[in-house]
Amino acid sequence: MVSEYPVGVVVGLEAEARIARNFGVPIEVGGGRAEGAAAASSRLVARGVSGLISFGLAGGLDPALIPGAMLVPATVLFEADRWDADAAMLQRLGGPTPGTLYGGGEVVASAQAKAALHARTGAVAVDLESAAVARTARQHGLPFAVLRAVCDGAARDLPRAALVALDGAGRIGMWRVILAALSRPGQLPDLIRLGGDAARARHALVTRARAIGRL
Image (cartoon, rainbow, N blue to C red; front, side):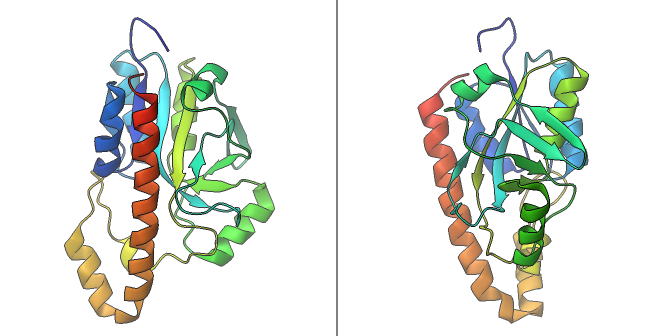
C-alpha cells in the first residue's frame, strides 16, 4: 500500500486503536456506532488518506466461527447495498477469508437474532462499522478493506450489561457495566464468558497486526 499518503484505520474502541497503532498510520475512533464510523471515515478522508480499513471486533453469525477467528472479507453487505474490498489491500491484511460481512445498523444481541440474520443474508459475521466505512470509501473513490476478529460467537447471547458498556468516544465505562450487572446478577456468568471471548479476539488482532507490521 505504498502511496503519497498512508491508508487510514477506523476503529470502534480505544482498545482497538491501541492495537492498530502497530500499523503506523492515521487512526480515528468511531465509538462503536455506524454514525461514528462514518464521521471517523470522513475525518480520515479529510486528512488525505489513500484508503480506509475497518478494524476491530465482530459478532459471529456462522456457527463454525469461534472467538478469535480472523475475518478479511472480500465483500461487505448492508440491506440492499454491497461493497467489494480492494484485492491488494485484502492480500496485505493476510488474504481474503470465506464469506461476507454484514455491516449491521444495530447490535445483534441474541443467538436467535444472529441465526435469523445468517439465514437471511448468508453473512458469516456482523459489525456496526464496516458498511459505513465502505460507503464513505466509495463516495470518495477510495479502496477499502476490513480486518476483524470474531468476539461473540453465533450461539452467544450478549448480556444487557455488555450493551451499555460503550460510550460515544469508544471507551468502556466499567461503572455502567457494574451497575447493570448488579441490577441483574444473573448476567455475571455470561459477562465472564464474554470477557474470555473478547480476550481471545483481542489476542488474535494483536497477533495479526504484529505480523502485518507497518502499512
